[in-house]
Amino acid sequence: MSTPPPTRHDDADNPYASAVVEADYAQQASDPRQPAAATSEEAEAERIAAKFGNPRKTIWLVIIAAIGGYIMMMGMGTALQLRLSVIDEDLATLVYSRATSLSALLMLAVVPIVGALSDRTLSRLGRRRPWIVGGYLVAFACFLIIGSSTSSIVIIAAYIIGIASAQAGFNAYSVIPVEGVPGNMRGRIMGFMGLCGALAMSAGSYIAGALVDISTILLMTVPPALAIITALPLLLLYKDPQHSREEIPQGGTLDMFAHMFVNPVKHPNFGIVWLSRFLAGAGMAAFLGFFVLYLIIGLHMSPAEAGAQAGHLSLMSAPVSIAVFMGSGWISDKLGMLRPLVALAAIIMAAGLIIAATSTSVAGFTVAWLVFAVGQPMYLTVDLALCAKVLPNEADAGKDMAVFGLALNLGNVLVPAVAPTLLGPASNNYPLLWGAAAALVFTGALLMPLVKGVK
Image 1 (cartoon, rainbow, N blue to C red):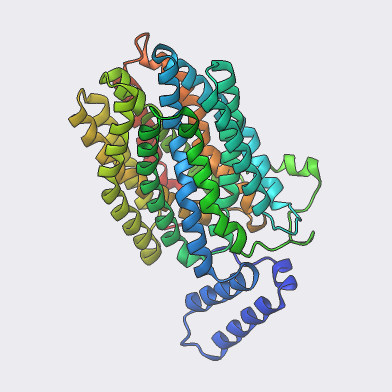
Image 2: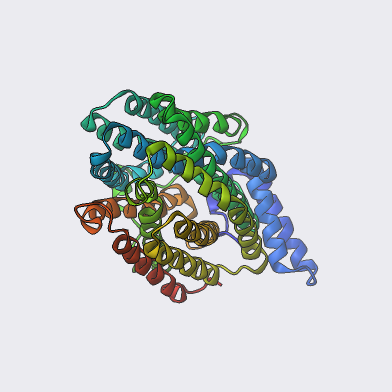
C-alpha cells in the first residue's frame, strides 16, 4: 500500500526528507531496473522517519497503547450494562439505550471537531498528544461519577461526556499509525491493533465480571485507568512534532466548519467506504452493545453470571480473532487486496447475526459469537487500511479519520434509539433486532464493488 505523496510544505520544512526523495528519484532514473514502487516506499519511509521518528518504534508504542485503549473503548459498554443492572434490572435496557444513543449523538459533533482541531494544534507537545491526555483524563473523571452514583440522570449525563471524551482521545491516538507509519506497513499494524482489541475485549469482560460484585467504582474506573497507563510510553517516547502554521490546514474557524465533512460527490470513494462502514457499525452496535442484556434478559442470567459469561465468550474467541487479525493484515499488505476482504468480513458478520437471531441457548449464542469473531476482526483490520487509502487530503488526516470514526458512532446513535422498539415491551425480541442488523451489514458488503481505484 502507499499513501498520497508528501505535500510541498512537508518537503520544504524537512530538508533531509526532501533530499532522500530527490536521491531516490535520481537513483531510479539512473537505474531502470529499480522498481518504482519499491523506490517510492523507501522514500516514504525515510520521510516519515525524519518527521515522526522510527516507524518500527512507533508501531510498538501504538500497540502498547492499544491494549488499554481498547479495554476502555470496548469494555465501557459492558461495564455500564452491569452497573445499570445492579441498580435496577427492569430499567437497565431503557437507561442504557438512552445513555449510549445520546452519547453517540454528541460524538457526531464533538469527534470531528476535535479531529479538525488536532490537525490545527500548534502546541510544543505536538498535535495528537494534548488531545489524548485531555480526552482520557476527562473520561476517567466521568466514569468515576458513574461508579459512585445511582441516579439515572447523573449516570446518563456522565456517560455522555465521558465516552465522548474517551472517543475524542482515542481518535487522536488512532491517527498516529496513519501519519507515523508507512503505507506498506499499515495493514500489519492495524492487524496488531485489532489483535490487541480482541484480547482487550476478553480482558475487559473479565474485569467487569470480576469487579461488579466487589466495587462499582472500580468497575467503572479500571478500564480508563488502564488506558492512561498503557498510553504513557506513547505519550513520552513518540516523536509528535510541533507543526508550523504552513503545515496545518489553512483557513479560520468558519473555514474549518465549512470543510468539516467530506463531500461524497467530489470524493465518491470516501462516501462509499463511509456508508459501508456505517452499515457494518450498526450491526456491531446491535450485537456487541446488547449481548450482555440478552444474557440477562433472554437467558435469565444474573449480572455477575452475565459478566463472567461475557468474559468466557471473549476468551474462547480470542485465538480465532488473533489468527484473523494477523492473517487479514498480512494478506492486505502482501496482495494489496482490500475490497474483497472487507466484503467477505461483512458477509461473515451478517451470518453471525443471523445465527444469534435464531439462537435460544448459551450453546447457540456461542456459535454465533465465534462466527462474528471471525468477521469483525477481519473487517476492522482491512477497513482501516481501506479508509487510509481513500483519504482526500493528507493534511486533514485527523479530521477525516474522525469522520470515518463517526460511521461507527452513528450506529451507536441509531441502534440504541430504535432497539427498545424492536425488542418490544418485554425487551426480548432479539430475532428482530439482530435480523435487521444482519440485513444492514450485508448491504454494506454489496457496496464494495462501487469503490474504484483500490484493489
